[in-house]
Every structure is written in structure tokens, then in C-alpha cells.
Image (cartoon, rainbow, N blue to C red; front, top):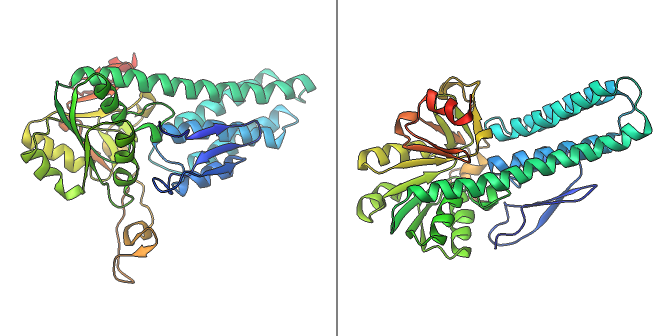
Length: 354
């Protein structure tokens, strides 16, 4: 079993420190929005759906701590809190979805209770926010189960599959997105073998995904990123599945750096390339992949591994954390509502019911 990623208390949230995995299982106590944002920026807390769930509880913790006295206080504090949370990571849209959902709830409550808050209203407000955060978490758990079922149905028997980065239980509050598809298919006896790319520079595949696959009993091996094309060619890989941090309205998909290359390789070798992501990952305001902000992270994450420097001192470094795979390279996008295929703007809208 994968350890709990978030443990909720009335006055704090215990966050599994994913920087220490797989060596140690330790938790960080977060008591407000600033602590939630810091854990997210520092990568102790990571995975697009998970940081959304955490943001919802971070919002609730912050508003409980500040104890607003008037509806104007609620509006001001809620806007500030949502902005603080959204600034933590610019690419993962699930974070924005959760923060805005909590903000909308707070603003609606303020509008319904104008002026000075009564003691009853002050008591009701934190419970309302807690309930919404728990609802958002339950929705993520169900979405993961449904994506697992939809994705497993796409895979052939004796499937040899590859994945990149970590889109498993550790990235969500459920069984995961891409890795959830693999584990769901494994439980149905459909997985012959799985390959996890190590995912430089942060090594989510080496530290997290292969650990999850091993704990689930999935026959699997770890490979370095630059082995992918060779393994696909020589080892019978017949599907690739990855997660997503943001999907534009036309289906262009931002995911961990290196995903685009796998999409190109999959097209050359004529194997299906799937993206598994819940619908809050789809940003209908983004016309295409060019509208997605690509986060640039610290050069230290490239030049150091577990505190050891692996590059010359003073070297110049680029570290885009994500890349965008064009919709034309994606065989299907697996959401909790079904599979978007072919991946077109019209089919994205149809999946969302818009």
C-alpha cells in the first residue's frame, strides 16, 4: 500500500514529504496557506491533482486561522489566500481549479452574509470550507478509479507499457492517473511488463513510480530516459501512458519534461500514446499549447543529485520543468468521463459536456 499523501486535521495538514522517498516516510505539518505553498514550491508536495487537493485544505486552514469578522474581511482574505496558493506552481491547472473553487465558495458565503458576521455565521464558515475540500478530495479519488477503468479497457492482453515521471497514487489522493491505469490493468491480468523512465532531473520515475509499481506487484523495470527509444524498439512496448499538468482546449498537453520526446518516438514506432488526466486538468481558456506557461525551476535540481554536485561549478543551466506534446501525437486522453479520441477541440468540448 502507498502511504497517505495528506492527513487532515482541524488545525493542520500532514503532508508526506516526497523528497525523502523511497528512503524515508516522513510528514511535514502545514498549518496555513503559506506553508502549503512552500511545500508545493519545494516539491515536498507534488503531483498535479494532489497539489490541488492540498490547496483546498490549505485555503480552509488559512481562513480558519484568520477568523474574519465581516463579509469584507472574507472577500479580502479569500482573494489573497487564493493568489498565494496559485503562485506556488504556474503550470499545474488543478492547483488553480481548487484555489478558485474555494475562493468562489468563500465569496458566495460573503455575499450571503453581508456586513458583520454573526457568531453562527462565523462558526458555519470553516465547516463549509472543510466540507468543500473533502468533497474535492473525494472527487479526485473517484476520478482516479474511473480513469483506471477507462484506461485499462484500452490496453491489450500481455501489454508492455511505458510511463514517464510519476502520475501514480503519490500524485493524487486516489490510485493515480497514468500509473493508476497501469495498476488497474495489472489487477485485470493485462500487464506483461511496465517500464518507468527515471525522469531527470528530479527523478520522479526512479524514486517514486518504480517504487509504486513494485509495491503493487507490477512486473516492472526502471530505465534511464535516453533508453526509451531502444527499449520501445527491442522490447515489444505496445503502449505509452503519461499524466498531465495542463491540457489546452485543443488537446495539446503539458507534462513533465521529456514527455514530448516520447510522443514523437511513439508516433515513429506506431504505438498508442495515451494521456490520463482528470477534467480539472483541461484549461478551456488556453487555445493551444503555446498559451501554457512553462515553469523554469532551479538549476540546482539539474546540477545536484541528493546533495552531490554532478556538473562543473558555475555551469550555465536550463531547467524547463515541462514540455508540451501536440494533440496530433496523442492517441487518446483518458478522463474520468471517458476517452477523448481522436484528440480535437470539438471532442475535448464534448467530453466536458460543453
